[in-house]
Image (cartoon, rainbow, N blue to C red):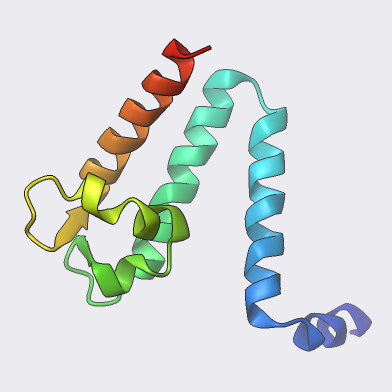
Length: 104
């Protein structure tokens, strides 16, 4: 009961950040294959939560609920249709990962 009360006192943004960091920390400790799977699961979960009209696409407004997607929205939306799909986000993330690994 005491834990529930303390959660309500935390600012919503701070709680979301804490949960995201906890998820990232858990992913970082897992072996590479498991980490990739967990990250993909987390991405799908966040995409589903952000896709408020459940059309399988995020508008710029919906993407604002996913900071990394929002920040990279124009790069992900290569067709300039004003929305991005989960597949487009995943493809962009893989491209970025490959570029980071090549730069090591």
